[in-house]
Length: 335
Image (cartoon, rainbow, N blue to C red):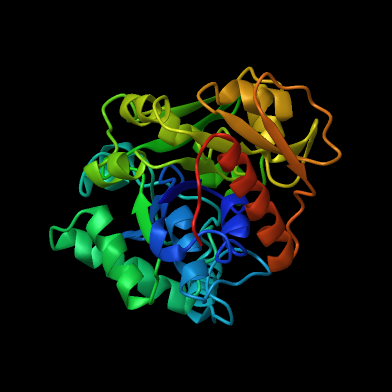
């Protein structure tokens, strides 16, 4: 058994070629939920859904978001209505008093559907509506995720990091913005002053997550701040990683990041935006996988390969290097 921690596109790209190395039936994926938002009343779980769609063979692998070949008639009509009515586009938060009313899991991240700022496809929307309906029937997010996984024919176990609300909030000179507003709605502007994981102090990983963390853990090349940070902000989650073998794949080649805002966010949170900074962010990690061109000298074991993952063959190569790093820690993986 091996457990992957996933957020953004880094870890899903690794998983896309990992089947030959890590048996899906013996693999669990714990997904970040700090990026989740409630949009127009339905709960969108981007990092959970990317893995669901990948494992269900429905993911759009050009964007690494949404369902391949999906239409967007509802999304387009929402924008047409807003334009015709002269309504402002962009992220539109519900009033403050509504941010803590209703579904607890959606706290601090509720947006109006008016001119929705996030592109939601028509089939994609059916996933969010089904999830929200299950929550409203009294199911937990973990249970709702399991139902969706079954419906999509997913073999890997996919778990949200918690059934409690944790919202990733970016503090900027223009005020506090949810991560999705800052990254999707504003294109990563304005500058970041700090990042807050609101709710993490009272949130806890589920029993299923804690059981998964008893197995060796692989942290894919995801953003250490906003993809993995919400998980580590929960004391119980971080404590569990202290007592199990952990291998982390760097999203950097020295000080160059493969994609996304990881460098900007690490600098804003007081860490060097580099492989060395990533290692500092993961003091519990026992070994690392770095790119062959990355000469960073770390104080823990390192396995190197070309970590660019443009194809499934690339991802399989990286997965085999992860397997090698685990074997150096005494962990044997059977595919």
